[in-house]
Length: 218
Image 1 (cartoon, one colour):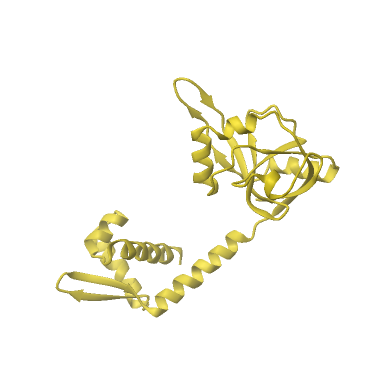
Image 2 (tube, rainbow, N blue to C red):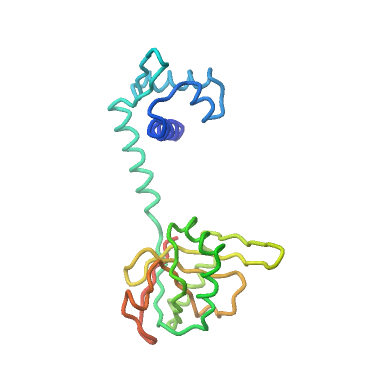
């Protein structure tokens, strides 16, 4: 089924981009022979997922109503499965940092990487949270063994920008946000840094000492 979903998705995107599709274009895009494309299209046609229309300019490929419903249902199922994530809940209090987050997030490499991997451009600064209760601290330790988004190390002739582990999250029910843990950090594990496209202190009306709840989505 996954093959059919991928094939249908790519056909849809190509049709949207080009207006019409030929077997030659599909062969090039899928990096397979025209014979293989023809065989796959025949399978989809036999399943009544697509129709192929011969014109003087070549063959036009369209989804049938069954094909559209099939793709929509499958993508909804996949989205639901992806959305079913475990949440790690951490409580803490807002604390002032040393301003390193602002410098860190003002670097184009990190700014572009977070946009690429997390889907948002972070506000230039992190919100520092200090953990004060045992359960939240244990949950923080769980992050070290949980899946994360890796922002890889970057090297050029002048410097090395260290790798960062990022965990998509919400803070006080606000999204998007993420917990970021640089692999080289001076912070103890009782302190975590949060990034977001928003200036969180202003958006959530926070000041030092205010309690917040972070839910990491892993």
